[in-house]
Amino acid sequence: MTDLNDYRTLLPSMRAIEASGSLTGKIRETIDASFSLDLEQIRKSNLVGLGSVSLPVAAANPYTPFNDDVRVYQYTGGGPLERVSKSTSVEANTSASGAYDGWTWDFDAGLTYDRQRLRADRGVDEDALTAAMEDDPEAINPFDLASYDLSRFAAYDVSVETSRVMEASLLATRVLGRTEAGEISTSLTLGATHNRLKNEVTEGGDDMTRTGELFNASGTANINVPLLSGDEDVGSPIGGVSVSPYVGFDASGKFGTKLSWGGGVMWTPHGNVSLSFNYSDDAVFPTMSNLYGIEFQLPGELVYDPMLGRMVSATEISGGNTELRPGRRDTLKADLSVRPITGKSYTFTANWTQSTLHNGITRFPDPTAALEAQFPDRFIRNAAGELIAFDSRPVNAYRNTTARLRFGFNATWRVTEEGITADTSRGGPPGGFRRSRGEVQTRGETMGRDASAGNRPPGGGNAGPPPNIPGMGQRRTPPGRIRFGLYHTWNLKQELQLYKGGQTLDLLNGEGAGSRSGTSPHTIEAQLGYFKAGAGIRLKGTWNSAQTINRDLTTGSFARIKSYYSVDVRVFKFFNPRDWEGTILNGVMLSLEAENITSTTPKIVGSNGYVTNTESVERYLGTTFMGKIRKSF
Image 1 (cartoon, rainbow, N blue to C red):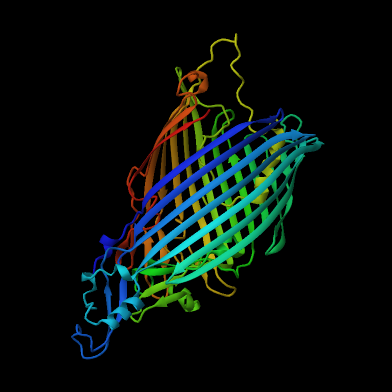
Image 2 (cartoon, rainbow, N blue to C red; image 1 turned 120 degrees about the vertical axis):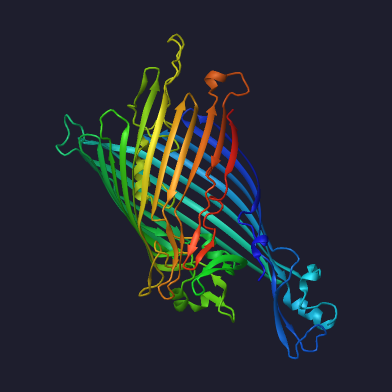
């Protein structure tokens, strides 16, 4: 009957220390190089309820009112259980780029060291407490444990994970020749990664250690061949057509060598329209954490119990699975871009993606009655039928299919003394509508984009604006710009089949999705900003449609997240060195940001009424204010 709300925190307290620096320069006249070092330490602490015990009490105990031996279930008091994590990360990266004998190349190398320590309170050690009561029956009243200091019986689990990653990659591009339709270009990539992971766990007095190492190498060859020219004067009647096939390999010391392949076709009819299709068939290897993350039990996790139709506090069993195998991902994409008015920066885009992951790695879904019937070993219930533990360690899923459609519109207007006019530039808003999280980008797309690097200036990067030449008059103040964008992401399919012939879970309709997975069927994003002379303000609004997170056809119970929205705002000012030379503000970027200024909190409702608040609480609970300063030397 105890109300645990006073002993839980929806948001952890957090302290973060970050420092970073970078150095750029030239090694030779044609080689640009940079080095960066990033340090970060984050400490989080949150409360996960009260500790509880199940103690056997003999009939001879002086405090018992019963004539028979009994078992007593109760909370122990002594303050809430705490979960404290501390992570330290050191990352060093170096890169160089240049040109040689017609090739443009980019080299990157990095070393990352991470250490994460997690301490999770378990309450008291039942065996030690029982032994103490047996040694001195009058020392502790088993029916009133909250009145005693039980700190000497405190039990906790500790997990320490240390990882080291060394990686290097090389990208080389060049133009091989020309056809009547344009340049034939190619890009070659080579990469290598060495991972080492060590886990040390102290759980219930037992020490466990697991160490794993993994070496991966990869390579890809891509070629872009224009077949028809899009030039309106001398091109083909149907516009420009180009193809970009690729082939690649992924090699692992544990899983052997797997081939990848794919390609794309781009059609640019005369006018402001482009249409492309891409297909890829890539190998997907398990990560180090998937394989060697050590088993760890986290008590106090809130999870929806489909049998009872409500949220319960249960222990989550997490960790890795060394029996995982590599999978493959098939991806088909179609992209459409239309500029309806020539010379105006009004752009409509639409992207359709369907991806099927065969034998891919997935976190085991949250409980449903059907899943529990198929995998009874993954769920543990007490004598009263309440879920007390569940196993979320990853598995190879037979098939995982997603499909989504994203479409929208963006535009830019110039603001001058004469008024507001449509911009004639082709650029979109910087930092604007990037690819949404989880949207698949094929290997072929990446290589196809990199293939265009052959047209960049030596050393990589984009050609900047012409310098302010003395004697050419005073530099004009650039006009202000208003940028607007509106995009809609429609998740058409999200299905998971754990094994061949098994039930296909519709995650969009809550079949095994859970409050920590699954996706809203519809998301609408809008951005509006004004920018001028290195200063600006940007508003961003996001709306998510209602989402079913757990629906069980067997019991008829369900839980849904109501639709919710959030609004963010960012104001920034860059002090351009050309205008602030010789001052302390030279090269300084200042920004003020506020996330979720509407203080949105998603509500979860179930078949029995209100359930709880959860689902991305760290992002959608309260308002976050941030001030940032950055200086370039």
